[in-house]
Length: 589
Image (cartoon, rainbow, N blue to C red; front, side, top):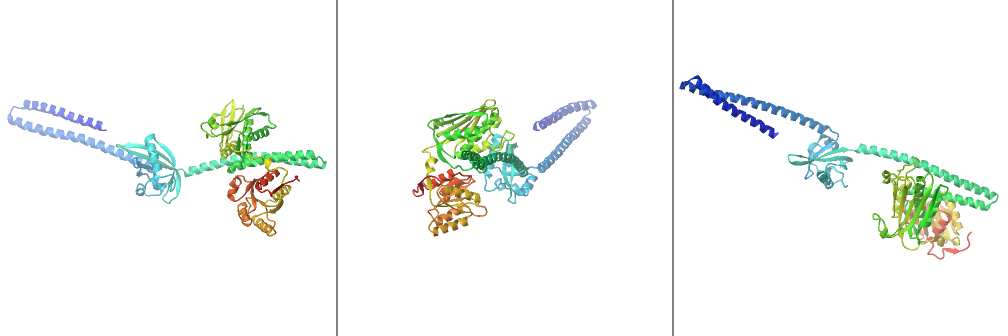
């Protein structure tokens, strides 16, 4: 612009000099030719001077007038462009803020910003970013300055921000932040878009996807439970017929088979509870090898896959929930079977891994390493990062829960699970569980058939069949059982027992009683009446922390549902393990 103006001025000055020189030379020569009379020459010289002045003035006027006209046209064009840009600036759907790059101060904003935030223009440009952001959160003036500095040094940035309107309501925005310079001054321009509706739509879509996945899950659960119930009913019916013959051996075999299928049903419910709420592990110190072998053998029974086992000796112990870790192994074996639809070998290794030999990205502690390798189709690289995500599955009938649940369980055990895979070669899943120091506790040592209890036991549950089964099991163990369906009944029975001089030695309390207080309230009241009473908490909802840490809630132990006679005998034996008068050695019933 400046170079163009300078060139035009040089042309005008140069032209004026040339014309002036030609005029002087031409006019002097013309005057000499016209006359030699001094008087006439003087008049002509005067006239030519005035003629030059007038001519020059007219020429300059024409040039200047033309320049002014061009300037006026340019200014009009600039005004029109500015008005056009202003119209765009004020009518775009985004709020636009112009900030000082050094201080972050708002220099200007458009009309849409005023509409979105609910402030007049004068008020809005006087506010700070912090005043326009959600209070008491990470969205502060300092955080905004970090984004500005990042924009200056790294280029344009796009991020989400919690903004606040004049009425105090907060909403989600998407901020596109860029920088520009004008006249040596650097500015930052923020385009802010209200994404509340967008996020609501995304949430609806996510909810629909979750419902679709839950529909697949529900269908799979119904299918699995129908199969399990068919096995349970079938075996019980056969046992009933065998008792008519009577064929006690066949009846026992069928009952044992029904119990085995019931165990699978329990494992399925535990898997659902673990996925739903995290399933706090109910741990004990034990070896991993036997558990792995039993789980793999059970999962491959009846399939076209065979398993090979390699174990380190002696086996290290781990502090684990055998149901949950068994569930992890089961899920990994099922995944391996699906990867080899035509059958094949599943290689299982259980190794002791010293801290120094652990992979660099895992804690440097002693671990038991379980690896399960298949020689199947493999997992595509693009799926490896998502394979442990909930509901992610590449199987038409899959729920996407197995590996997600396994990942959750490993984390609850302070362990780790990961996978290596190559398409067309196969996959290997690695499970690391921290080593536990000390000696494992044998259930058989604590609760053998010959250990019989004595005394009265109170059972509180809202389900009649649970009370019936628990009472029969307790009597089988040598105890006297009394039932209550709620806290009020339980407390009244405890008071009566104390008054008659035969207090309850123990109580088994359901943690949840519909329509009223449950086990947490009951244990407080019972121990206030009789501090000597020993109390077990029982629940089918294993995610409750009470089952994992019963002592923190006033209980003396826990008994997860569903439980077998062996589980009940074990829990009661542990409850009274420090009381030599609580159990006696006698033949079983």
